[in-house]
Length: 301
Image (cartoon, rainbow, N blue to C red; front, side, top):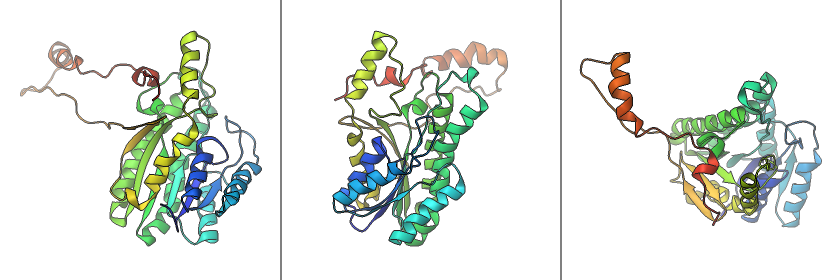
């Protein structure tokens, strides 16, 4: 499905990114495998992480090149895109998958923990998308695929930085889709459920937590890759500005914020009339304080 296309996958040295890169290659794409080889918290560097995946792709008889630039600054993102353009002559798809975690309850979170996560996830998606937008517009085609998370779409404990970044990615994707639609460039999001180092930090202090982790372990990274391949392909030409969740063998189309219910008074509102009328009328439609595990509570199919 991707013969002749060039795909950039960030954070592709392992986990979901690695599986996406391999699947893209199997479907005929030439791949830029980007990974700085950092730890889960974003510390350290190991440029061999990307090269190992390039070697795997070469073993499949496909073409790939390693890149170890960081997505967290505009120069690094521009260099990643330049790697693809210089080696393969074009960029058809960018998968914004790179990520780190610095989990902590928000009132105990340091500025550095906030900044580091926002930089990689939200700034990274922005920098990469902006760097690729020019070449894609010139081609009149392109696909941007952003990894979001139900931690942002629904909510989770001790992940204010990650949740804010991932929900920001959804808004970014929608804006990109609107801005670049006339240029033939699409932008969509995937919220993956899969066992990888990004979720390996989930606590298992209680039987309920341990059971949840065992369920997640059933959902392997290779289950995410087919949807990414599809969204990168011409078969997805009519798919734009959507948010999907992949959960083992399930693909879920997620809702996006829309009006639920409204109340009005022709004379306008006072604080007292809001308390007496508006909130009682609206309360039945309040969105509950769910976490991701509360909404996706059934066993993976």
